[in-house]
Every structure is written in C-alpha cells, then in structure tokens.
Length: 216
Image 1 (cartoon, helix red, strand yellow):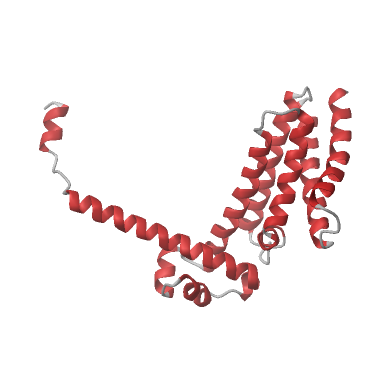
Image 2 (image 1 turned 120 degrees about the vertical axis):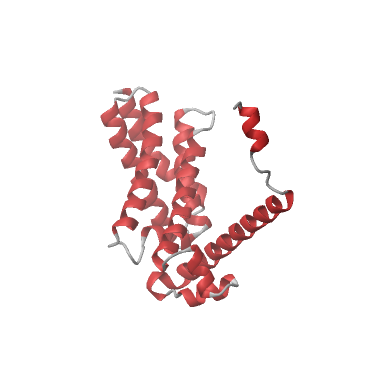
C-alpha cells in the first residue's frame, strides 16, 4: 500500500470537530492564563503561606475544582508563577547582550536589565529572591538555575573579549551578583537617586574591574 493509499483510507476529521477542538484548547489556555494572573497577584500580596487556592480561584473567576484541573497543588501554581518571573529575568539579560554594541555598553545594558526587573515589578522580585518557601528544593533549584543562565550569557561575552573560561565564568557570577545586590539595595533604600545614576554607579564598579581583568 502506498502512502497515498494510506492517506485516502485514513478517516477524515470533520471540520466542525477541528474547530471545536481548537476552541476548547483556546479556552483552556485562557483559563490557565487567568489562573496565573490571579495567583501572581495573590502570592505577591500575601506570600506563599498566606495565599489560598480559594482566593486565587475566586480572583480568576473559576471554581476551585476547575483550578485544580490546571494545577495539582498550590506549590505547582507557585512554581509556575515563579518560573514566569525567572524567564523574564533571563530574557532581559539575553536581550541586553544580544545588542550590536561594544563590551562596555553591553555590561551597562545587562546591569540595567537587573534594575528594570527590580524596578518594574518589586513584588515579583520579592517573590523570586525572598521566597517564603526557600527550603523547597524545587524552588532553590529554579532560582539557582536562572542565575546560572544569566552568568553563562555574560561569561560568553567575556570569553569573546579574550578572557579564559574559568575567569570568565567567575567574573560573570560576580557581575550577576553585584548587579542584583545593587539593584535590590537601590529599591530597598526607596530609589534615593535616579535609576540611570544608580546603574552608572554599578557599571563603574563592574566595568572598571572587568576591563582590567580582560586586558590581563
């Protein structure tokens, strides 16, 4: 039997069924997004332990049993929200380093990406780095993995600038840690100076050291 024969003999899927199935998938996706938006607001407002699936389901406009068909537990829902923030952080660094610019400008863009992440959604930053469930291995792993991804992206730029692998990775972790600490201090202090000045200060610390290390 040829492939053509097989195709002819295969039962056709009615167009109405395809449309119905597509509609169901779209509705399911929309419900998941609604659940994530609601959970994000509740977790940021009340923390992990203070949040309840009852409040999340009500805010999402669905019953709790329906919510559980999308996320098996509160921890599963928390991890989904957490991963969304972590992905945004990593994507910010990736976009900053993908620019067609010199090394110094890329460092500034990478540092700015951390400040933007902290500044544009302080609640999300708190959720990521001050999690109420840090003892959960899956939470620690996700945060550590995201920070590692950022360091890998930065280290690739440092290697391209002539630094050896070991020092590039060590300096990349230093840059990531310094950027995060500086941005967090700036936020906790009540944004005492304009963000651009805070970024310039952090960049001066990072880039003066990195440029010297690269030359060596």
